[in-house]
Image (cartoon, rainbow, N blue to C red; front, side, top):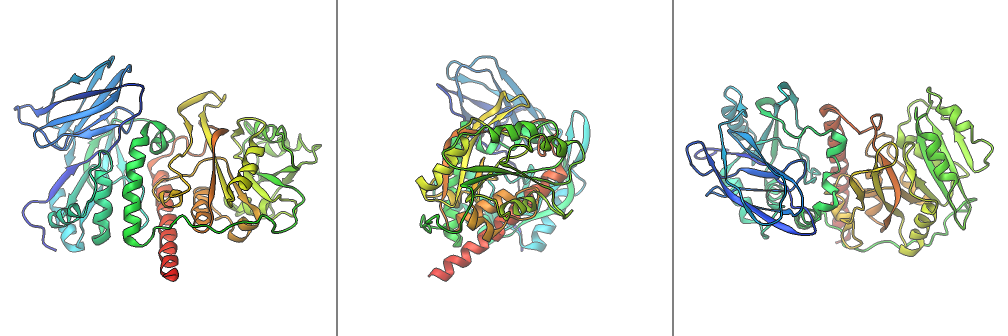
Length: 509
């Protein structure tokens, strides 16, 4: 591959606008210290995904909610990030910004290295690992390989991307829509259809990191309700991509009669647990206080706890609805514990999830979830949850309703997002057939994709679940290695599912 002229080097931060009672436009021009206009400057509202990018004249325009204090972050390759605070936005405003040369620094011969690898690999785009400077401390910031199933719109390529100019132009010509938020997402999907996107696992540049939120605070940006405009555009781009590569599924589903098997209970709540002494009693009480017009029980799979959790569960042994299982095996993750519970002879017709550090929102959650199966004729139901602190006070981003899941396109759009919501409930005969992956992360997402390949997934849009975020929560604050491992696995899940759907479509032709 021959890259002509100079390689295209871009600093890209892509984002979306937020909802609000009123809107105001902040616009202006961005120039360097010499007064020259700066294009490709990323402008975003701090700690959100709301943002835009300056044009070739250095002009930008950004819509924000009125009545709030707004902090804008200006970022551009080769320049220091600039921050501007607007204490109160009540109307359209003009804000011009000067940017100074930067702390983002390319490594020795980094650009030459990227060009060589791009040529050798015939890549349409290359990206690289880098160093991250946070509060003056430098650390490794590796990224992950791009896969066939890397359809997340928040895939982290890092800040420096190098494109083959001819490939970039060719992909851009195939873009059909004018997007406010999904332009880069659409572009890289189209680029990936014909060209490899190559990860260089070498540390080729350093940059200052300004978003210092914990990973557990960042992971819900993609479903924050105020980002609904962005979600809609991303769904459109993803759906078009799936149609192009043969992975799109029409809204046609298998019907369910709910008459398979003879179950002693209508529903079972499944709680896998290990060392959750601080929360397990709350979870148990949340289940046993449920009011329903059917028989239900609670199956707890206690995965060899050592902190007193086992004894705490035994405090409720007088309630005949509670089944306390301790596995004989020592190799079970959360998914394996689920399999043990679901295949228990006293498991109900529907298996309903509850994590050991969460609670149901009210005493009617179980009734609402079971009703949804019959009302929507679905094999799986996903509820709506509210983010809370340990004491169950609401925290940002608040209510997560996953409205991007629609009956018409939910199972296609699910390949774009990184989760499906909570609580999750399953028709037990099908769950027993499919089985849960024996992992402790992503097993529920894998099930959702697998179920949706053939069956409708029902939705409950009222808050029925409280998801607690606290220091010991499994993903409250993950280091970059664990975050990358999680994202790599979910991308792999998407790859397998996408391959299966393409094969299914070919078979049905």
